[in-house]
Image (cartoon, rainbow, N blue to C red; front, side, top):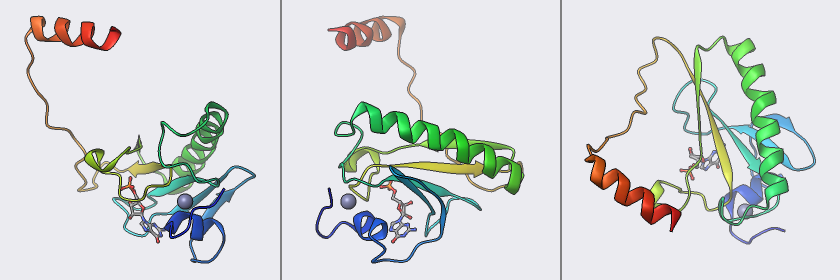
Length: 136
Ligand code: 5GP
Ligand code: ZN
């Protein structure tokens, strides 16, 4: 399944070059062209799914397997001190390429990157209300 004008479909098809660090039947791992830190990589599922909601469960399992393999390999070889593993869905959440992928971002003690979130301070009533909304 390939989508026209999708940059990641073109990378998977080899129409756009990339630095590939891992590849199997389901996934390809490449270096991000605008890395947040040294080694920032993205796991791209080969078939086109817009986002996590579209991704079949068996493909999600494959992504996690690759994340385990590559985070270990990158930690060993890059000697990083930690990882941010993240994944954006839809424009409002910062997704810019609408083809499912997962970010592997190695973190180093002295990197200048800051991926911390702005947080809210909800009351316990608000937390309870939110919980009830979620469980429906
Ligand atoms: P998103 O914002 O959708 O979660 O992440 C998309 C990522 O893809 C960004 O970090 C961006 O730098 C990366 N990216 C976009 N175009 C290309 C490309 O042509 N090649 C590579 N290697 N990475 C890309
Ligand atoms: Zn695509």
